[in-house]
Image (cartoon, rainbow, N blue to C red; front, side, top):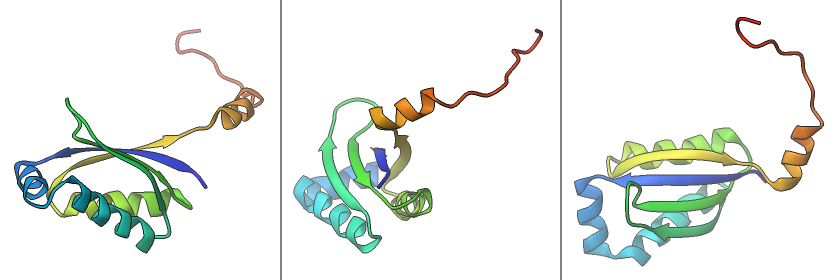
Amino acid sequence: MPKYLVRATLTQEGVKGTLKEGGSARRAVIQRLAESLGTRLEAFYYAFGEDDIYGIFDAPDNVTAAASSMIVASSGIGRVQTVVLITPEEMDEVTKKHGEYTRPGD
């Protein structure tokens, strides 16, 4: 199953809710969302800096991963960015693909 890195930046409302409910409770909500969509939450962390939350998910496809991000983003508690992760073995396959390309101006 493809892996996805989800980065979230909480809004003021999201921070207030997390402080009220606690970090474990919010992780449990994300776990239930993942299971309801047929995805698996592999890791969930809070962080300092530009992003407040990092999660790694296994999802069957991009549509399911996008649905998950849209559901969370539509709640208004934060801005969500999803990154498709590529395994080293998949990168090996990438190196075997060759195509024709010309740089602009060449």
